[in-house]
Length: 283
Image 1 (cartoon, rainbow, N blue to C red):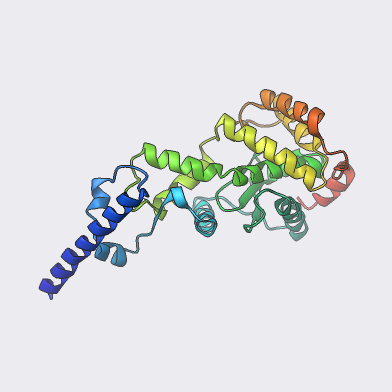
Image 2 (spheres, rainbow, N blue to C red):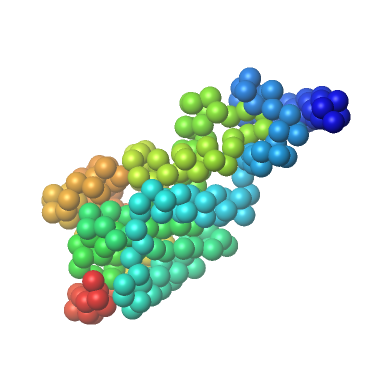
């Protein structure tokens, strides 16, 4: 028995080395293979259930699946989903789906969830997952303001900012090899990005631009994003949002310039604070 296991392992190694040679020849290796991955046999991969992903060639289905796994990991880390009031949950989801349908990446499924947390924050992960804190829902005064924040987060998904950051971090930490990056490593990185690591300035600017255009196409008054950002600039909200959404002053100036140059005149929805307050009464 031990003889055949040994033969299988040796044969598995020969298959793996051939596969790596093919990957090198076709230019799919995104960095120098790590010794620990180079020594893994096909038998080890089969029995260990290890899945590897090439971030340079990530499909939409793979990204959505990665988002689902990250979502599950976030909940294991203590992110609590709010579901006490179905009307509030449905209201927020309807806003998100309305925006997603008009986004530049409407061909993937989107999942919008409320996080039971009084801090004023929102974030997005890979594959169409958007999270809005109850504290932010209370801080917004109108549906247009909430739609602006949610459109901004959709902008991060459209720009694939989470996936790009995963690639950067994986390369910087030397965990990219011939087989790609393990799903477990990517999920761990995704959790860190969601909870602790802010987006780059360029990513925030791009998400602002994409979100601004998105909410206009969806019929929302684009001034909603500006007025919410002005709250950040004036220091009217708690610092949690600053940790993941830097440079409020510069962003307000850029958004105001964008509105002056290219606002959508027929986008006027979401400006009634009484209606919004009524929708949020369940909180």
